[in-house]
Amino acid sequence: MKKLVVVCVSSVFGNSRPVYGPEACELIVGQMIVPNLAPKTPSDTVMVTEMGSTFGILEGFGDERYDQEFKILKNQIIPDN
Image 1 (cartoon, helix red, strand yellow):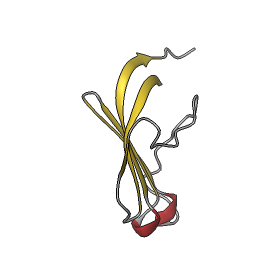
Image 2: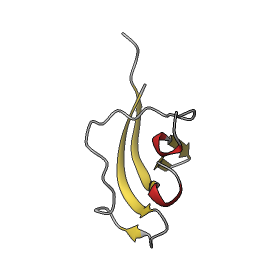
Image 3: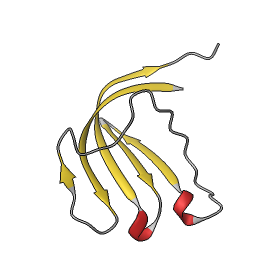
Image 4: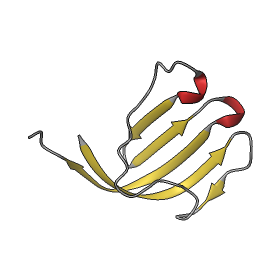
């Protein structure tokens, strides 16, 4: 498991224009995000990406998708108990 400290870069809902800045995302502090790459319906899709100092979350599908991009400030591995 990982603990990331991030700041929002941008978010996009559906086909709307992107919103930029640290207040653009709706990530909840302490939220555990679990990828769901084989959902029962496309709207239940949750994809998580991490590349270098960028972290992304894509939820939903098509016009109902919500895509958030973050800059990673701190990346910490949490040991299993």
